[in-house]
Length: 266
Image 1 (cartoon, rainbow, N blue to C red):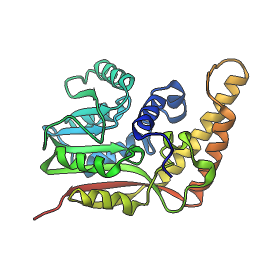
Image 2 (image 1 turned 180 degrees about the vertical axis):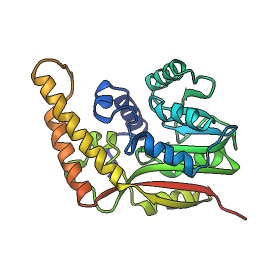
Image 3 (image 1 turned 90 degrees about the horizontal axis):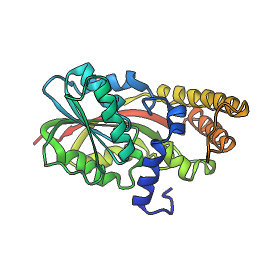
Image 4 (image 1 turned 60 degrees about the vertical axis):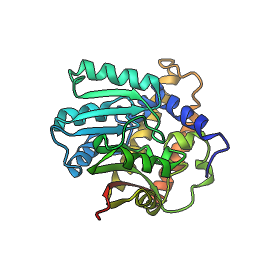
C-alpha cells in the first residue's frame, strides 16, 4: 500500500534512514539479502568483465560496486539519492585502492542524468521495490543501457497481501511495504521493451531476517547495559516488526529473486 507521503519525501526519508548507523548495525555492510555472495552471482549472470561500464543504482555505501569492480575488473558507477552514502562510498573506494574503477554520484533512479546507451550493464540490489514509480525506473534502466546490454535486479517479492503490522515507513525502509509480485516487476521491465529470466533466492531473505533478529537482541542487551545509545530508535517496535516480518517470510508471503533482463530482439 502506498503511504500518504509524497513520493519525493518518501524517497528522501528512505535514503536518510539507510545512511544511519542503526541501519548498518541491523543490516551489515551489504544492506541486502545474500550479501556479497549473491552480488557475485549477479555479476556472473551478467557476465561482467574488464572493459564493461556498469551502473549500480541505489548503490548505498558502495560495498557492492567496489566488490564488483575488484572481482570482475569492470568500471562501476554507483548512483544513490543520499549524499552521505555517496561520500562514504567514495571514501571506501579510495581506501580500497579502487577509485579508478568504482566511482559514485548522487542521482535519482527515476530520472538519471546520463546520456542514452551509456552502460553495458545495470544492476540494482534490493531497491527497485522501494521506488515509488517503478515503471519510470525500469524505463530509465533501459534508456541508459547499451544496445546489447543487460540488467540485473535482486529484490524482495510478494505472494500475498502485506500484513497490517508491516505497513508504515519502517516497512518501506525494510523494502517490505511496496514489494510486488514477481509478475509485476516483469511487466514493468517488459513495458520498457526488456525480456526477463528469473532465479529464486528465498533462502537469502530468510537468513537475513534471522540475522536481523539476532542483531536486534544484541543491540537490546548493549542498550540495557548502557553501552550503546540509539537516540530516536524504538527497539521494542523494531523487534515486533522483525517478528512479524519473519512470520510473513516463513509463511511464504515474501520471497527474494534475481531478475536478468535484456533488450527484446527484433
